[in-house]
Length: 401
Length: 184
Image (cartoon, rainbow over all chains, first blue to last red):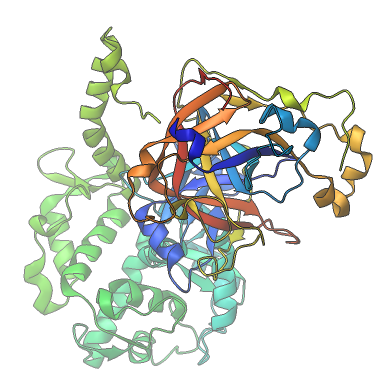
């Protein structure tokens, strides 16, 4: 027999066993981990309150694995096969039981034992797999729930919110404190820090260091900031499409007469500037936005969306299309007015309850629209598979191991 | 050497599982290392073997940490570790010395030759003897996706940290039932 001659390895089982987890890596993750300066990965799950506020239909409880830029949902996959983790034996083999493997002593009087041994130190009944849903991960729904809404009203009603310190050069924007407050918010958001950052920028969220509060401005507030900065830019001759100093823009926003009381915090203006800045010139959140130039197309689209969100947030409050187009044009600098057209709006960002009106569609609703259209064929296939009595078809879609 | 009175460690045997089911249960509640930074050892790929002993596996299965994966259909039953018999084992300091190995069988790669490690034909055949009279036939397979072996990092205070101890790319896989064999 061929097996007689080939080298055999004694196989043992170690007690007590150790605890291990097996995680299946995606190619990108493998590359990341094998690289020289492999980053620290994070396992994140939402805080209890956030998990209740932002319900994930696919799972009640979940843990996400986050690289600096990517997020993966961890799924535990059970298998009735057992996966043992082996390592070379340390040689503490119970001699009393050795006869299980080798019965009789050979001619030399010694047991014909293999010289070398491996031992099972752990058994895993499941592996962890990583998934990315087709819609991806976004921090926006979580940020919307965890940040306080900054509205014009909150500024008017509550005198404390008037940013009395904001007119200082520092503008109440201690970068270290800002970062600390932002990190505190992001710690509970189960997506990667890059995705948190992009969601943060999308919402024009900002930090008020003095109060220790992170805000997200309402659509009305963003519209107000936009109108104000556009007027200021026109008055001061700032070309928004060319590079300008954000500090100049801020000065243009302040009235000369009541410079002590700015219309909104400087951090908010900077958040809006960051949002509208040409994407590849946008600095990281950790860095100050000193210079900016606005992306005209992006800007035009953004203005239309916040105008719709501010004036016609629901189908019941839909406004006339021609009114909307006129108002949209009025919100744009003179040279941009020609850009305002319904065709320039992002697909799915609006709906028309009737042919003459228009209203806003929340980004979260948009995703659902896309999801249902994408899920329909899959659901049909699943329904078909369920009705069949053919085992092959029933099990075809399941993953085998 | 340690003594285990009245316990039959020799009864290691294979339980067959009739069906293989892969399910996706809701995420495990015990996997709650939330917000725990997880740091792969930066030198994992170049680290010297953690065990001073020679690694008897074919080159392909050897990893820097010495860990390898073996999958089989079924379960190897070994009597449960009874800590009351080894009262001092509860003392973590002596845990290492209290660990012991129960022989199960032998592992063989009949077509493997150390002289020709680049030829991968040997991967097609592997034997696992359980006891003396049962043999399983399997193979060495490249994993479709590499598997990271995670372990809790010892000594992490406050936060729980997991460590990627190893990234494994191959497994020894026994998908067939054991067959009776003569003593070898």
